[in-house]
Structures are given as structure tokens and as C-alpha cells.
Amino acid sequence: MKRIKWIFVVYAVLATISIMGIGVAIGEESILGVIVSIVAVILVMGFGFKTKAKLRVTGKW
Image (cartoon, rainbow, N blue to C red; front, top):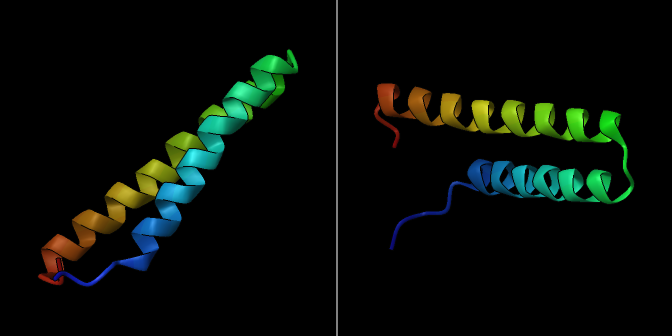
């Protein structure tokens, strides 16, 4: 069984919370909240992909 990469679990949870934030902001009719949540999703997923690429290059993946 493969070991869990906890940093990716954290990234996944943060991305999920950010996506949920989009829904809450839409429900609250907050344009600023939607924009902040979308930016947060992009940043968190970008960091996740960047980390994964870095691990592949170093051979730790």
C-alpha cells in the first residue's frame, strides 16, 4: 500500500473549502466572495500541481 502524501490531502481539503466558498458567496450574493473563492481555488490547485511536479522531478513521487 502506498504512503499517504499528507500535503496533497491538505491541498485537496483547501480546494474543496474554496469551492464550497463559491457556493456560499453565490447564496449570499457576494461578488467579492465569489472572486476571492475563485482566486483561492486557482492558487491552491496551482500549488498542488507545482508540488506534484517538483516531487516527480526529484524522483520522490
